[in-house]
Amino acid sequence: MRNIILIVFSLYFFTACTNKYESNTPKNLIEIKQMEDILIDLYLLEASARNCILTNQSDSLEIWIVQQTNALLKERNIEHSQFLESHTYYMGHEKLAQELMENIVNRLVKIETQAVIQQQKSEKQTDSTLKNIKSESVVIKTEKK
Image (cartoon, rainbow, N blue to C red):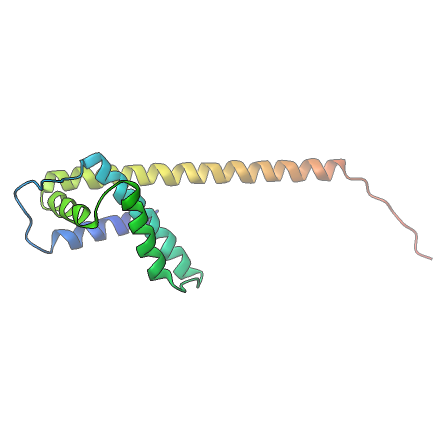
């Protein structure tokens, strides 16, 4: 969880400290809610990539990340340039960027919380199933000769 928040704020910090931002709204500006959805998917994609690196499965990882990012944008009928212009616009407007990042962090926390709860339920079911199997088992003793 700390990694996700660190990634979000690192991205926010680095984008806030670069390029001059447009004060004019781009013609094809992505709506803030859709931008939020895209960024969440990109952060989850990045988390998957980091997991692959940690488990030494980094063969062709860069190619996979580019393919997944392109597929994510294509799925939403968004051009890469449109995404970059919209991202630059939102990061250049402090209140919009803050709102966007707060919503993203809140949603990522919610996603992680739901995943942890689901994992705990799954583990509890597995433990319960194993206990049932153990209680229904029959022990057969054999004598050694």
